[in-house]
Length: 179
Image 1: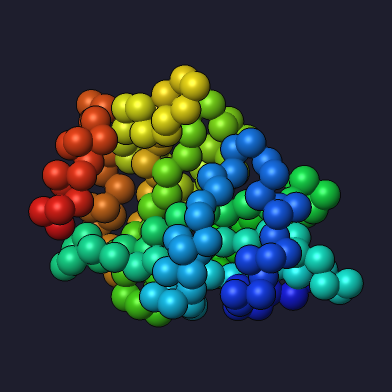
Image 2 (image 1 turned 60 degrees about the vertical axis):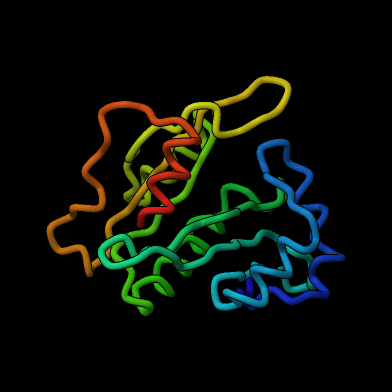
């Protein structure tokens, strides 16, 4: 039986087995603690009966007016527990929290090369809203998809009308600053 529970500071010393995946973004401790302090309800983990961390989701709520939305900062499931529906369970949890916060949509960024994740998000009702050029940096910079799912508050689904052209990180920062 899987238990969903709030992520705690103690979990920061136990979740390395989940973060070893090369597609998982790993952050510094201060980043995780900032999310724990500011958006604790958006930081949940899935735990096995023996106490092992199976996966987690970290997110936040942000924006203004009709851009008020939930954001998935990180979602990852340990390789030992994949294909059990845990990622979908965690996503539904974040979507429910966002509904309660009266958000218009939920968004996330995913590597264009991560076809498994893109397929999962598509099956959960997300669409590719726009492409962000060179969003991920590394040995080879990689583009990201900004994927979105409209929530019940967005009756006319305005939040999921896709952009036709890719945008740069600079344009994304400018757009986010204005919203």
